[in-house]
Amino acid sequence: PDSNASSSEDTSKRWQHGGTAVGPSVLLTKAITWNLYWCLLDPMFDDATMRVKSDFLRDVDGLRKRFRYAAMLNLCFAPFTAASLFLHYAMKHAEHFYSNPNAIVSNRGWSEVALWKFRLYNEVDHIFARRCARAHKPASEYVSQFPSPMMSIAMKFVSFVVGSFAALLIVLTFIDDSILEVHLLGRTMLWYAAVFGVVLTISRSLSSDEDAYMDPAKKLHEVTRHTYYAPASWASAGAAVSSGGGDGGVASEFGQFDVAHSRAVLAEFERFFKFKSLLFIEELAGVILAPYLLYFVLPELSDDILSFLRSHVKHT
Image 1: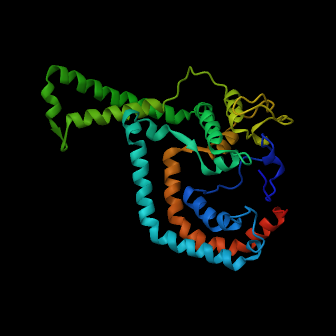
Image 2: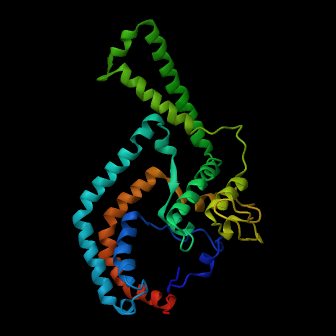
Image 3: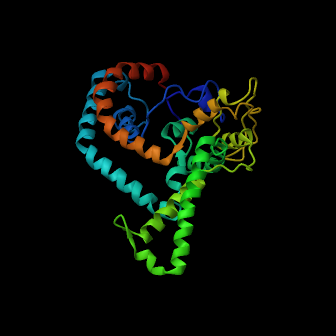
């Protein structure tokens, strides 16, 4: 499809590389993204021709007004937005957390910044979603190869203590099942048994397997085969990049990920692949911070934003 917005060279390629994964920490949430669409991207294009409006690129005051108007709307609806986010998160994950309690602290997902980095120019939604879904398993396996020794020791100790109490409670239940109706500190033993089960499941999931096969380079390469994104800082010096292939099954190599085992690469990767609980907290923070950003920060940057667009947009 035609477009009068020029794409950068590396987004026109299937593989994106060079530099580091991300610079300073970036808070990009769905709430902030929606506001940017409404204030910036939607009014930028002409509905009839789908070309960038020339007058939009020079209307600095108009952009500032849209940002501040959006800030007022966000401030008014912030309590309702936060409540709906909480309800949506609880209803979406309640059954999963019930059947798999360790998912509360172990499940991860791609951040909004990662999705913006991974998406190809003019890529359709369902293909992009498929690529990200395919990359999820190797990404989880990659981060799981960096267990914290102190955390593992602590969780094994917790598993031992809680498991001992749970085993004792089971034995006492076989002797006299009325023990489950006994109250301790205002709670029945049945309640304690349920808590022991949840804590035991979570602690065991956080304990590392000492006999597990470790190959961070292989797992990171599997991730990049689906995301098509591999900064030079993730690979050894002189690693080459080639493009080609189709969706998912890419016959490409990104050299050898000789530094995939380093904590520096892991830290960069984890800024893309975060715990879902942390992503939820960031979404709530985005709802709270959106009015401030839209009213005080972005209006001051309106001139710079439009200047950037004027230098990167060509009219045909």
